[in-house]
Image 1 (spheres, one colour):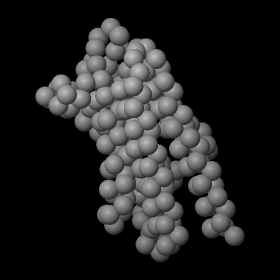
Image 2 (cartoon, rainbow, N blue to C red; image 1 turned 120 degrees about the horizontal axis):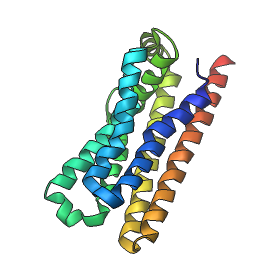
Image 3 (spheres, helix red, strand yellow; image 1 turned 180 degrees about the vertical axis):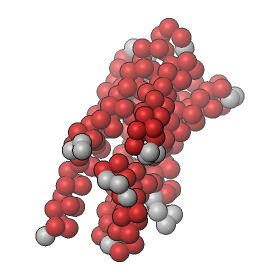
Image 4 (cartoon, rainbow, N blue to C red; image 1 turned 135 degrees about the vertical axis):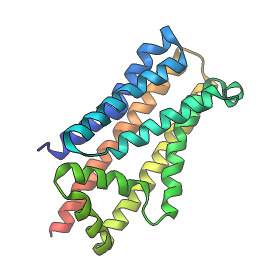
Amino acid sequence: MMIPSARYALAFVVNVALPALAYRITIGRYGVVDALIASAAPLVVWMIIDVVRYRHFDALSALVLAGVAMSLMVLLSGASRWMGEARDPAVSGIIGVLFLLSLFLERPLVFYLARSTMSREKQGGEAEFDARWQSRPALARSIRLMTVVWGIGLVGENLARLWITLALTEPDAGRLSTWVRYVMYGGLTVWTIIYRRIYIKRQQQ
């Protein structure tokens, strides 16, 4: 069984690093549309492996893939004409908004991400997580806090990248925007690992 820290690191590589790398390698030669399609390839391969090997549906990969799909839809529509080069950060920021809007639902987005992780850790994990959600108010509060942090973090990251895209010129804008993305996603991942450990330790006391 993969230890939690390694699992989160692998999730970061598959859902952030590999798509970003595929995008950067492809865009210079083939253009934005093909670059977005290439960035989706690691996600699709990972989801297929997950389903075939573990009989598990990765909610995080599906969420990132949905963001890529929305980017393609905007790019292929008339909206891309007035969004210009700002379309990438603006569209990816939609995911952060969805996190925040999901707080109004009975089960926010992080619930499904955490449930997905639990199902990979052990057989029958989904049912166990559903039972904990119903019986432990502390779990529900922690899930909503994580939803708030990720939502604000993603929206803030994309507002920063949008400003960089509009204020600077290439190649400086592209390099700085990429660094902001990695720093924010890395920071959110590290915070999630630390917060999860603190939560588990408190529940064991």
